[in-house]
Amino acid sequence: MEDTPPQTEKSSAPDDQKPVKKKKKRTAKSYALSLLIKIGVTALLVWILLSFVVGVFVCHDNYAYPMIKDGDLCITYRLDSLRQGDEIIYRYNGVVRVGRIVAQAGDSVDISGDRVNVNGYALAEDTVYPTTKNGATVSFPYKVPENCVFVLNDHRDDPDDSRIYGGIPLESVEGKVVLVMRRRGI
Image 1 (cartoon, rainbow, N blue to C red):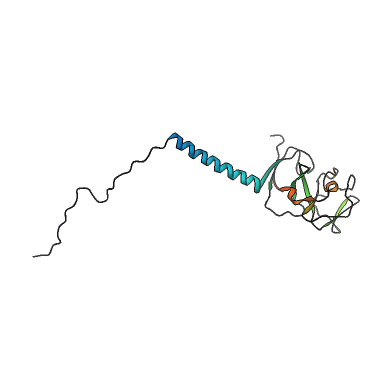
Image 2: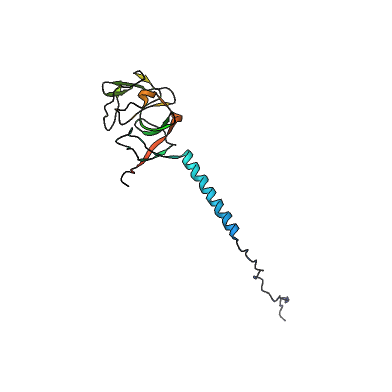
């Protein structure tokens, strides 16, 4: 006789079948709550982005003419280090202004004739803008204080820049202009 394993009784239901749980129906209230959470998280992320990383400004003057004209939209980046030649957005007495950094902390700025000299050397610019001391309230040569930058308008006939204000504190700088969108004629 052959040895055969003992037979066990099998239940009538197969082993792989488990009781099926019914899915709860989502209500309008749960959809609304989910939507509000998503909107809130998105709004928080946009606020953080616009507060600490980028800035959006509309230029309301021609201080940076011809690069930036009245009515242009400027996007700034706040996390980049500032260098000589950068176009920046800054606040002075609560007014948003646009200017170009020509000197940084510790540099000596002198304006003679119609030229700007930084640390004894002529300012290296793609386009030479005649710059005079007319209307300036600071005396030259001017040494830029710590944590400040010396800013000139590209439209140099208007001395409403560091020639009047002196050094612009770094905490007043809103950011470096990285994108200019022309809004005229749209």
